Length: 446
Image 1 (cartoon, one colour):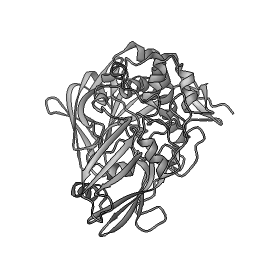
Image 2 (tube, rainbow, N blue to C red):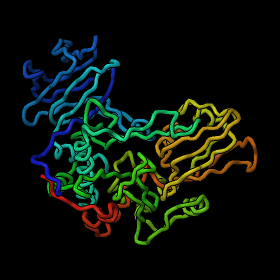
Image 3 (tube, rainbow, N blue to C red):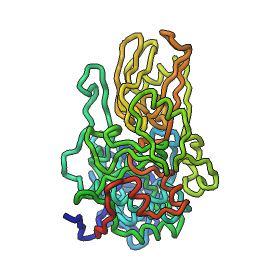
Image 4 (cartoon, helix red, strand yellow):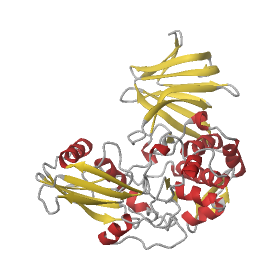
């Protein structure tokens, strides 16, 4: 049965969450709960379970558990010091401008959450330009518009369904095992967040090109579908030559259109052994995302992503004491003297889904893909597709650990850099989507 949506949905996007003080500016006249008008600078803080909104002169403009603030046609609002890339190596704070309404809510644990409510197509214009550069090839921009629309519409479609929840730690069916994954269904106060946990949404700040507007407009209402449902279309920055299957990063289920494919003209064999992983990660295969074309990368990547110079293959080295400290801080597990790091299970791209840490005070098994990346970096490792070498070899207390890795991100679904390279070589948006999402179809939903 074909999927059909009667009209363009609206989406609620959490821009900041649980902040003690939210500050910004209303650019134009905004009404608070349909009554009092405010404009200019504002601030909001929580008090006894309610949001207190102050104007630029410090006068109270509203007080409630939730305040809806709406602007007229063309009105926008700014939010100051929005965190982007939270927890990742590119984390920073920026001022962002947004269209639509803002809802300020008091959290149960204190703090204020700011939510932007906008039509899906307006949301997508920002997402496409926030995820990648607005100067990227036109077919890639159309591809990303379809991709991001598919994902967010699938989130809306899943609302009310029981999520495939990440089990609490310790978990995984074995003592001393921690298994976690992170999904968009974690958000209770809004549909999606504005950061990499869901998909980047930096408001009007990133909409710098008519090409982005055209990509969204020309694909309006079009999404990937499979078996009569909207595809949960995932993507990451660079797969490293092979894309990953869904279960390596999230729940233990098979998603037929999210399986391992070669990111290049040649077909590569999926990884099944540690020896294959070492050979694969130690090589530089002919893959679309294996590009060092600086001019092309400048066209397709936002400035802060271009700070990540080595993404196809990379190396991170730690002194033992430093890595012990990172593991303690990020996991709460104290390994004592770190003796070994042992991959137990890998996905077909070489990404580790279960890994054992062995120390003088015991052992701990960790999964899945993102949790492993968290435990082995002060921010996040680029990916969990890595091999481990300890120096000196054979020592019961190595002095140094070297992690050699492949790719940037979870690797599931579309490889953003690979897809952009495909577009630069003349592939159409439809051909790119068919490559990364085998068996899925393009459908006009509204």
